[in-house]
Length: 165
Ligand code: ZN
Image: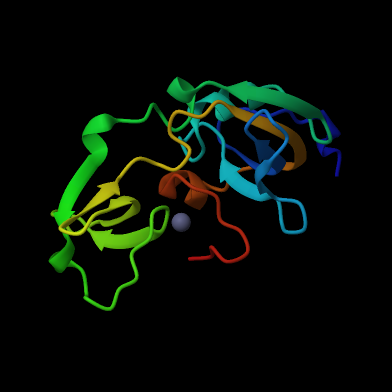
């Protein structure tokens, strides 16, 4: 294989090694110790600020990318907080600030919210993404690159280990 000559472009499957931190060194997420992240470039599979920065990179190339909230997980939305009566939750549920709760939205979609506040009568849930409002610092390396198959293009995502269908 001579994939050294390939560079990241739309409709390529990218295998990406990455480490995400928030500017103070604390690592929030990393592919280190597991398989690289595989995705289909140009199909909104990853946050826009990171996807844009990868165009033209070659296999083995490394880069540090800073993504502002607009191009990442958005800003924290104050309307995304919701007050729910305490008795809407099971009485034996030990609600604590910061814990994640899986819910089903009005439209039947699964959703995750985080407990922001626990009061005697009410619980405030935060539906923002935990990384909303954050400036994201990625250290990335292109681990591999290949043209997508026709099936992957028609599905709009990469097929790899654990995602064969
Ligand atoms: Zn598929």
